[in-house]
Amino acid sequence: MTGYLSFIRQHWALLGFGFLTVFWGNFGQSFFVAWFGADIQRTLGLSAAEYGSAYSLGTLMSAIAVVWAGGVIDRVSLRTYTLLVSAGLACAMLVLSQANSLWMLLPGFFLLRLFGQALLPHTGITTMTRHFDKQRGKAVSVAMSAVPGGEIVLPVMAVALIAAIGWQSTFLGLALAVPVLLVPLLLWLLKHAQLAAPETSLPDPLTSNAASHSPEPANAAGRREVLRDYRYWLAMPGIIANPFLITGIFIHQNFLADSKGWSLSWLATCFVVYGVVHWLSSLITGALVDRYKGVRLLSVFLIPLLLCMLVAAFVPGPWAAILMMVCLGISAGSSPPITGSLWPEIYGTRKLGSIRAMNMSVMVLSTSVAPVLFGYFIDSGVTAAGLYGSCALYVLVALVLINFSYPANPAPHGTASPVT
Image (tube, rainbow, N blue to C red; front, side, top):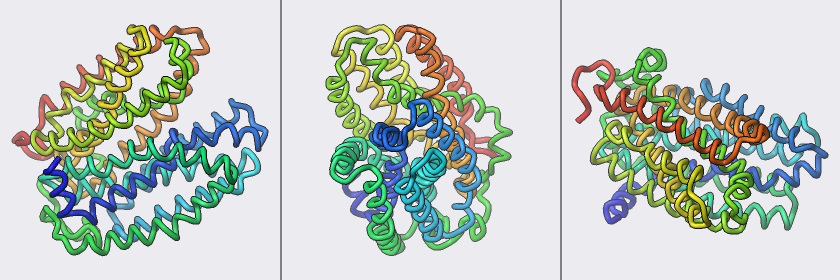
């Protein structure tokens, strides 16, 4: 932990930028939006199916748009991209604050999922992985610690604001907070971050376009090279396993609680455990990535998720909820530092934004499919043992496949030597 403290003191501004972009991205995450669902349905007179369809369609559309929008970070300055993405988040919240029908709700969800769930975290994590080299794992962990922080703080804030001023006024207030609070703070952090020289030989990513101002690294690659790499296709089922399964579990948590005989209050208590373990796992994994490299840890990072699915399927009793959330928290916390460091380790940093945007599109797509797929099996009468047992089998297959991908051949793209 002392290593983290000295690291934060040295790079406080840039790390603060990464943390803040990821934190504000939480406003587009399902765990936050879910608290508005009942009030939105009641105000607009929507059925659960209509509301769920609008949310899933908005998420699906954002998964398509992020392929292009995420790659723009490679072609413009970080300041410009930050302003564009922040403006998009403000527009999303403004549209939702004025929504009076399903047809206004849909573009609001699309913009919120695109700029909140996808592009703001994309901005922060791409900056961390591009700017830092030897301490890349710690940088990603510090930024991603904003997610468990948001999971603990934002639901309470959402419930209080909705009760006090209503859901539409809450979105309006958040929309106004973007230009008043978020943008000035981000620009201030970027201004101070310029004082520190980058760890790598890259040009200053705060003011320049890495793709047009830096020489091509030996192992630099773009989307085309990634898609031609067989290792990528072997690894993807495992890389999307965390967002896919965690979304399915969270959205259908009532089914889990009913099947296991857990009260919702007990499950809510266990979610606090999940948030704490998520945060600790992220910090510990970040240090491990800096020591061993993300490509080496890729071979084991799915094991906690496999244990989580097995507990959900077969372990009875109230304490199984604690065990499940501990495993899920370890999995959720370890995934971003490992996968976030993997791409620059293998493919370089010049077109990192485009590569991350492509992968994020697949992950966002998986989060739009998960609620529908889980719901189909639940409505078909599949038991908890059958559903989560099948999930465990999927994770096991993904774990085998991922071990035949980058861990089996960790050579960076365009080289013959392994990562050391």
